[in-house]
Length: 236
Length: 285
Image (cartoon, rainbow over all chains, first blue to last red; front, side, top):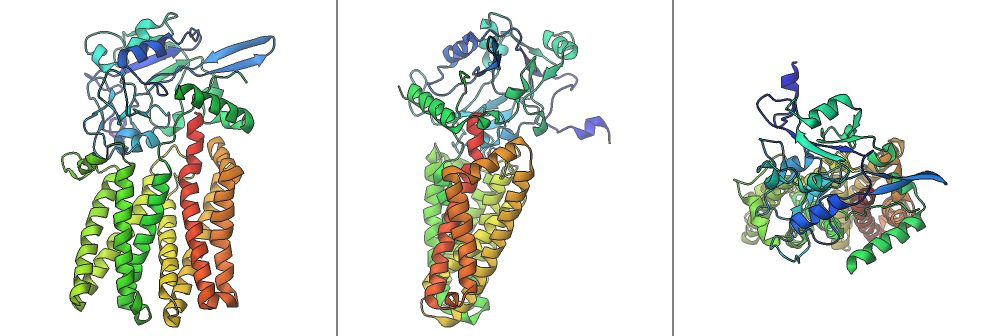
């Protein structure tokens, strides 16, 4: 069977004549300033407790030689996204030009099956009350700043990244920076075994963070302390 | 220490587990009502099982709709222009609606005393009822990234749980009817045995899997979740009723009713643990 026949019909990577946007996150350049998270919050009025992009970190090494290893996270805009397959009403769909995985808010019934399907926990339920926008009680996620990209701008997180750790562009364009970075560097994606073909590529990521559930190995009482602190923080 | 972990919310909360429990009994009672047309011993349960099944369908439907964050958009799922047939939820919604219609027609036939139509509609309702536990299991199975859920035996487990729960409620409803109790005891024994076998296979393969499976096994067999899953679900709700039904006391009415209560408690605990346990890991990633 030829390669063309083996790919899923909704995939757009390496499809001639089609754009396929991707993000490269160079973790060697990330300083953990969280400016991307703040820019994203400002762009979308994302409420407290939920984020379209977030930057977890791990302290690695042994004192005194320790460092923080950051791993910026966001929707991976997979080439074969399970959330699209799982949405019963077609509220989640893949945009043919650019491969953005987007949400039709007016259709979403809030069944959260897309949240369960996403291997990256990139989706969240918008709470009932928001400050500036009437869109509530539906599932939301990163859109790769679709509205900005269609106006030839880069996503807000990329625009604001002080260390140029985030690079965005068309992976199907061989002259783009993302194509160059993916071709010339050893890159990782999150949970490749899921077969979703993510479009967020990491350079220099720590394997202990890209894999599933390593935190569960930590002491339960420490996890409980952190979880209660987290909840307390977002209840303010 | 000092790491910055982002804690995610689980996708499906306990309401969904209660829905699984209620809809399982609903399907089981529908099977039982159909069984009354095949086996004379179950005849006294025909109307009771049919009405019970319908009442639980209403409760289950309300739970399911209430659990949506946009309950009024439930109708979106019945809109042919929106339906996405790759989603098990879409099939489930169609199945529930079709089962509801068949149940109403069946109840009407029973009230009219129309035997021919009643038997036909009982068969249709039972077939559609079979789809209810299958789709609820399938709903979990399709999630490729979730340990325990992502196994093809999940729909089979839910069917076995539905038969066990339906028989348990039947045993409670049958009262002093010896002939019905004898048959329901057999149903309960074999279906609970099937649940036990499937649970062993799920636990075995989960413990044998990769890091995520191993961690989920650990989460599901220790602490509070361990008490619910292993303590109430496996020991008190599966092993104990089997032992009870095999003992001489299990052949008496009280024994069968006690076994029924244990099966129901176990069924509720298993559905809760199977829904919530595998989601704990996703809150940490």
